[in-house]
Image (cartoon, rainbow, N blue to C red; front, side, top):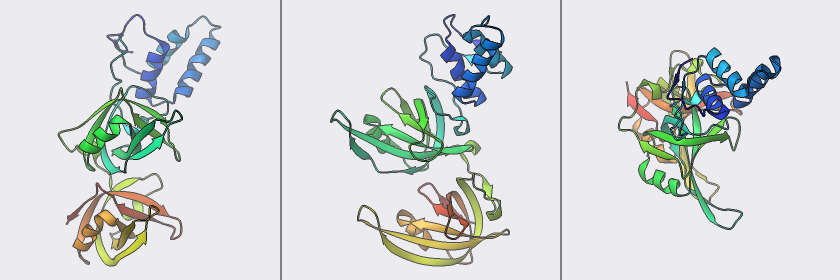
Length: 287
């Protein structure tokens, strides 16, 4: 086990946090193993000692600054678990949603801006609260690679998974580059897509275009949706274009082959097949 710049006042929480980040174990599982180790030696080992032994066993590098202000080392989305604090993480922005205003229990008005980010290991929702919502809306665009600093995680508000939260003590910035392979979605064939794939890149030939249709949104506004049927050497699929990307649907030509990067993958229960949705970060390139 390597311990760098570690204060003599290292706490159990310091060690547990590093095990969660580096080993990818849920916090509850780490504490269970710590308590089990203490019990097995009849209390002759402290919880801090047991946690240090566990870190050693898992080859966790304890690089902790004693002042408690340094952010944890950057990790990937795959290893996020609920209850983590002081997270540093980077991802490519896939979608940005409208700012929502709400009233707190004390009567004050709050704001939240949600967006989806992803890296090569997965995707997650990020919530920017209050003042951070305005800052994010003014500086972040779909397709940007952003770094989040000193953020915290909670169980997803909807469905399974984990949401990240950017509060007053958090920071973020847009990286100069658009990201390398670590931010690239996996290039797949149509038949390779499975339930755990949320984003992917397809190279396929447009077989048929379905013209846009209007629909009414829940907020009363009118939107458009169009489709393109495509195929590769392994099968056929449907690519869906929504209001903001209808212009891209107009630009593709039947019979031509394209690379569709950063498509959102969704399962259509009615048709019992995967659909591929063009989102704000999708890039369409002729091949």
